[in-house]
Length: 408
Image (cartoon, rainbow, N blue to C red; front, side, top):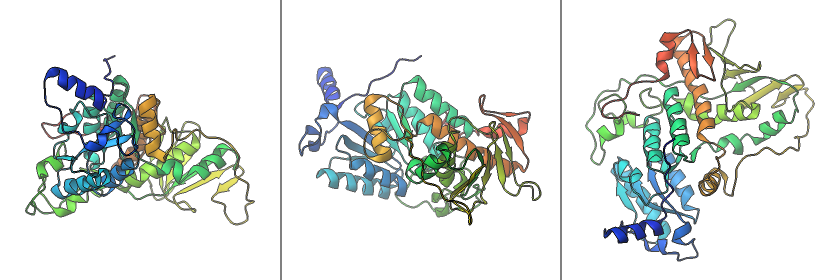
């Protein structure tokens, strides 16, 4: 196993720079322990990468924790970087936050402990692997990967370099813990079927070329994705296959994640995936080794619906309502929700609630569903080897090539 790097505290970094006779990065005045904040030796320095709407929301969430010091922000869109810097500087009462356009300027900085990744999906795995190899812990927005093979690579990197990696799906616990308690507590008997509602797959993009607007590094935005002419519609990346798995991986990361955790299937996967055929299978269907069946769409109670031998939830007319079982289900550690859980685990070196293995397994279910829709035929899946069984044509879609010079 490769040697791991311990997070470099700001105090340790400065000491090393002084010994080496080099000039350190500019350190904000608020890093000196003023305003009742933790001393520099116990503070976690952060770089934030990808600061569109959701990335900025996550960054502002981290700003609410006094043990975090955001020192640099990165985005290929000038206005996003400037907006993020404004939030950081306003919080700390300074003008010290540094803006960069290339994520490598963040992941290679020795004074940064943790990295937030809020880029479009096609960048997630590449940045995460680069950051972890440099000794950073990672908080990455969902969906954590663009392909199944990317996910396993990210897990392997996290384990090899002993990094803490948290996926960014807060809804798995915060929205769905009622279902977790009901199903795990036996309120509906032996679980049989689950319906997961979310939008469907992404699609090919054929938008015509437009002039690249000032302040946007379009080539860097594309990164590992195939070259394509700029069109403003591509910046809304969710619908397009080159950049995202669509609603299936976006809200699917929340909703399939909630369903898998409810059923205790969050560290495995299905054994068969069957697309709708208009006859026997009305919806995309997943079969698991324990006999539980998942359906994409078709539920009656919002995002998640469950049926067991003794009833269903949400309840249907005429069903006897039952009290929520009083059981304890391990979830977030520390304080402050999903972000607080991540920060706690960075300090203790525990695995967070949305550990990368769990996040990878969830988004794999979404990727496999997209593949079944695309192929229009069923296939078998080995959740241990993470391989499609007996269908080489389908198996080649578990990954996709990256545009040079980007590799994983």
